Length: 236
Image (tube, rainbow, N blue to C red; front, side, top):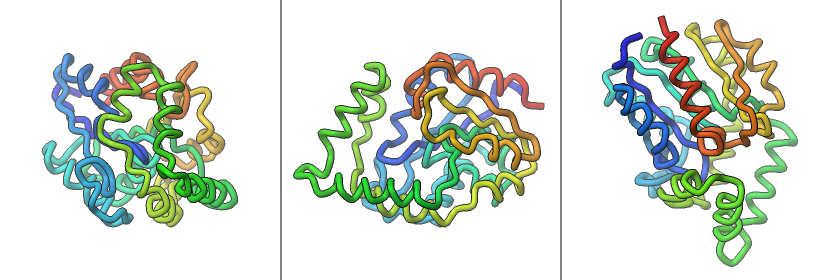
């Protein structure tokens, strides 16, 4: 694939487009155009309601802005919706990178996550101090700054998780005919079902990034950038 292959980035929950600043800077150095979007309820779209349709529409607008054929890269929440988009609009992608989302978003695990989010919302600051503290402790300084730069939309948690529970990522991966790279941090709690996700792909590969946590692109930005560089070089 030529050096002009465009890359569209989709962020995780309680984050925004700014979490991809380091990856975009590295792509710019190698001549790849890129765009990082905000999903509904996040960043510049924080006043919009989060729904499945709105999230997929935001991704589609990003693909169009880049010319209509992209490598789609999504992490966590963004990974689930990137998988759903790939199944719905495969002709608009040259490949899919689904990071930090190899966990079926259903059942007791998701229910416990939603309950925890609701409890945290009861705190006086709705959990803002807890969230920012964890980000600063768990991520390198630049990664933490990027994660927090676009704001912390704590109020989108329940709507985002409720909508995501309606997705079927295993089915969507089976429907998408293009190449898929599942990229997970070695210490990511969301990699529990990665073998099931890999088996669902028609043309899939699994990459585990050493010493990386759930926010793999922020925890190990150089390693993640190297993964993207290899993927871009191998696209047919």
